[in-house]
Image (cartoon, rainbow, N blue to C red; front, side, top):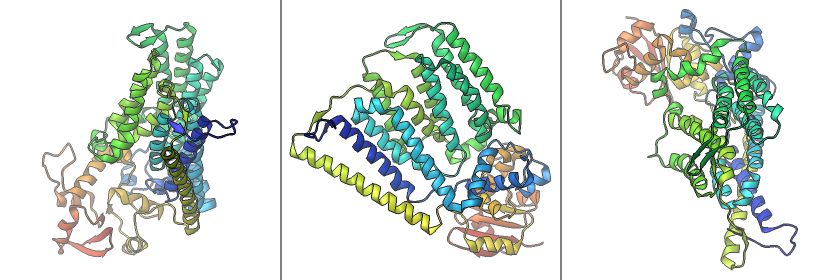
Length: 505
């Protein structure tokens, strides 16, 4: 790998390369963040935060779905503290406040990742630039107004504490982890189980002496795994320190049992190696890090392999965990990146390539900065899925028992309109509400208690007593409704959605 040499030796070729790659990474990140952030789930989260602040309590039953309220459906509000934070920012600063909060969180977290990997990037700038270049493209897909951004920080700091403990630094600091577990339980309880699971993995890696090829593990002094097991137990107990209680502790395991929900929601599905985007952003960095671990001539620490395997297992189960793997890789894989000598640039074409790379970074940084300013001034930084005309149609029609498309629920919730179900899929997995809703939308039977291959529209309509239907235009149910004008009246449609009222028979 080559970089421009300077006559002033105070700033070496390695330093120049490190700074140039870092500048490029942050420029790419800024460029994508400058396009705005997704609104996925944000709108109902901020509305939940408003409800909590208004009532001074955390809901234990559904408060947004008319059917959920009727049936008293249990709601595990495991992200309540994040929702309060989002609401407080939004109520004071609006969309601009949330947007700047997310941008700042993404930049700070990227800096933390970069600093953690700094000495390994300098050792092999080629590997470092490839990994963080892909990271810079992926990160904006995960940084938006959802509670999982708090999990990113908590995971990072726990891994830092555990690896510091394993390397003999800050032995007492490992007892900070139970306090992180308390925060995790309230900010994003669905991932809080990682707080004690990681401690157990580190304890397992220090319990045995193993020698298999280059895989090596030396049994630590008994105090090391014992302290880790104690921290794991304290962390597990700390998860119970929340307004909802043990439901947060059980929440992730309850979710894993909902196979229908996991198979339908895209972010819960397994990765698809046939998709080019996933090949580049998911499988390529995994291949790079595995190659680095294989190419290193030293021993592979068992704990590192366990951590790598754990997060790969999570990723292969659901694409949403790929970013957690990126975080873990900085700790468990980067130390094995092989050294690659950096020499000075001498050939003219090499200078041209590097100068074009730096120019690209400058242009991306400028475009990103301009994009953020333009998006900020426009005031429309978080996408909404329903138009004002459609929202007004629903208000005017005032349905009492609406059936809405799964991904339009949060927009209705934010505008104080009733919903049948929304993206809180875990809540609607109860009583097969989620399955019935998806079955009606797609006309394919998803309810495991039903024998038919296709959904019986009229049976489901009668079961729930719907009086209005709000759907995406491309849903299979829409042609069915159009073909029965004696039963369903088309009230309004725009380029994305349609609304039908149910006529009395």
